[in-house]
Length: 115
Image (cartoon, rainbow, N blue to C red):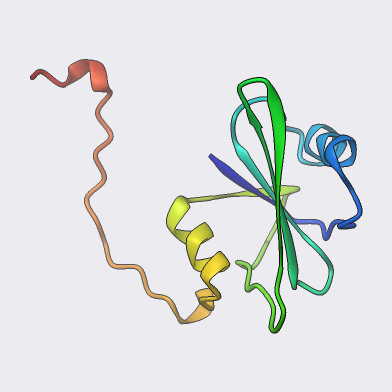
């Protein structure tokens, strides 16, 4: 799962600061294995915070030119993104110009699938 923090974040925050943001503001479990995405006010820097096995990772990207385009946030402290949307944000694609085509969604539990 990928969660985007709706509040611009101070990029000086490190592990403890981001852990606190996930727990208190986003009201989520930092050790769940989900990706937590933070951006600065100007939108040209992004941090991804995640737990992996026995420690936390921080991935940090600063754009030399331009800004990241994030989806509009209507309510809440965090928004769940899918993988494709996150990749489009990181690649610099403006989400306003993207149209999604209808796709079939397989929702049966794996236990019902027989080889």
